[in-house]
Length: 494
Image (cartoon, rainbow, N blue to C red; front, top):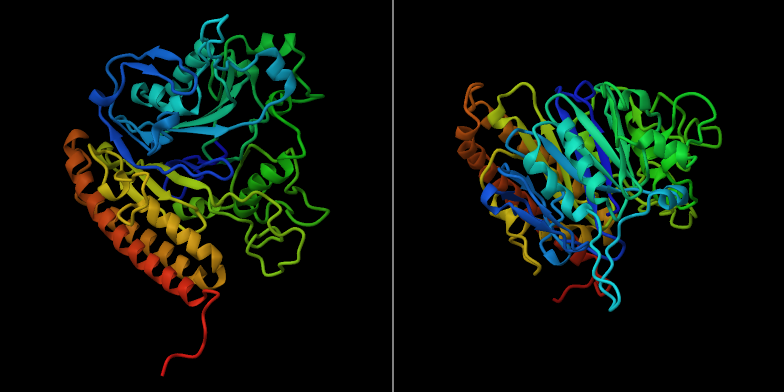
């Protein structure tokens, strides 16, 4: 899916947490309703069959409980999205990536082929719909997540190029698939952040480390031979550049992918480089934007929300810009786009106990118009306001309320912008306050299992607050939009 990922190392975050976040977006012209659920071990399949690729895989026992953000309409599979398991290990899957013809020719994607009368059905590999379900319930660390998913890719292959993030209390790892069966992964530096649009992102990659101690790099075991045999290394000098070898270099990237990375890096490093004008150090159409960058200041939850809601505000590419005649207006693909389905930010906090360590911040709908709200992940059930999403539109659902708010506010952006700002400020402020209040009720030695009921109590209080603030904002935006209908007239009946 066309998404955007943002990863923040523990020394780059404001509170020492590791943070992994991702927008999940539908393809152009479509929308996928999402819900927040908890998958219990008894509900985890032991034999898994992919809807898209018709691949069947036996899964190990026992699985752990985990949170997920699956599709409401399961026609194309689960698409679990993002979540946290019982050991406070998190995963977000996936970021659809680009590739090139040399890679695809050397290791073709493993695509499903139906029976045609002459040949039997041939299953495809694994893909985005499968990965969270196949991996998150079984891993004990971020590093182990890379290893398990890598083994599946080597064994079954994949029918698409994807990037996947894993986090635990100490590390964040980013894995990118290469062709049908190959992959590389790099640990996010503790003092850095990584922004990933829909392109192959890892640049410098230490193959010696990946084939040796694997301190900061991992890869499929035959990757050096694969590179050499297929003449994939395009580096002239210096360290091996994985993006040059495995990524794309297309004109489409310069309106769809590179501008998103440019916007986020421009936000976190405004003074480190020149970002604007013909003499800029980095431009929105540059192919060499760094994969990882040290920010100028520590990054907060609100920074992540702002970055992953970006629509090029403050630049000539803003689709809501005042100069409607500008040819640059709306030229670049926004991060905060109409077809955002969810934003998930998992924060693993080192200063509290395991029972309340993982906080999953969630927003549904278009990020330019929604609010990010925290929920504890150590739960056996999610609040109904987020878990009860159905295909039918309903104001009892957080997802559908945010879709309605966005569609109304977009059409009346200038008059509704202040209402959205108040909504975001209020929800996020009250969310912090509720987390702070309930954190005080957890002891450092409270066993993980014993903390679940308190986490659920906190989440219900947060959901009640969220429902109140969202209903108030929908009413305000609806009133404003109604006042600006084309058939309005200034004279009242008298």
